[in-house]
Length: 425
Image (cartoon, rainbow, N blue to C red; front, side):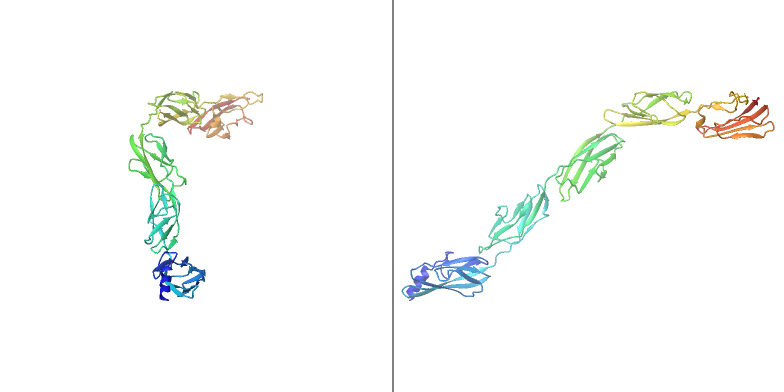
């Protein structure tokens, strides 16, 4: 009987290629096949000690049995064989079932990174082997592209499991850039951010104008007060912390000098034309503004004013670098006070010289007007503030009458006139 058992022990072979009494290391959740050599007419009986750990799912009466490994722990698998000659033998193997590993991966830094910056992903423990979702077999993964990353690990017992996954977002690079308009001293220079980004959004930006002054606006306008060379920089940062910067050298140029002469020095309503002569240095006229809503682009224009008053004449000049200067001078057009008062009138209703009153230029521009008639005793017999109303002399005798006129003209000057008129009927 003992020889038969020895023979059976010698022939007992397992699919894991371990001989009897060795410990077989397997993993929870697997199904595993155990087998011994087949002999004709033999009867096989398999038994599991501590059957709560593993169960037979097929081949219980054959030379080849499959077990389901339910939970971790150690059990002994025993097989009893009764051959065709009635001889009996048995063998066993010790099986240890291990829990599967529980890998957890984490990123050594933010999961939203900038293009060109590498991010390391690592596991929470050391394992025998690694298979990352991108095919890498290294213990740590160096990430530089967007994707969902995980790893399948294998421990020392051959047990495998997959980790959690981490979504990595790699922001595409953007290129910092800017343009500017106006490079003239004491004139506004406007800077425009023209940086390109896939998202089109920037979290912050910093301008440095090359002289210690900074700004966080976009666009931004800055006034250089000195001619010279400046290094202007722009630093851009996205919401994910990606940064880029650019430096441009700009030269702030001098301006032309605007100036002009004019003649005559004074003008009036009777002689309202004035001539302008451009005397600007390093600049050509860009615009004349005569102060009365009339403009000109002529080098040295002439202009006729319609109304008395003070006008601010502005000349804007521009050079080849588009630098601008301007100058304003005040021009006064004086009011020619012209007023005619007849010495007599004949109110006889013949349609000729029937009424008495003053006549003048631009009377409708007066700011105030008062006209009075007095008899020989100094009594006021007529008064009006209407420039269109005259004295008709009705109900009054022939004779000499006094008159007085008080006017505030369109420039605010006060004029008082007095005289006599002869009423003839």
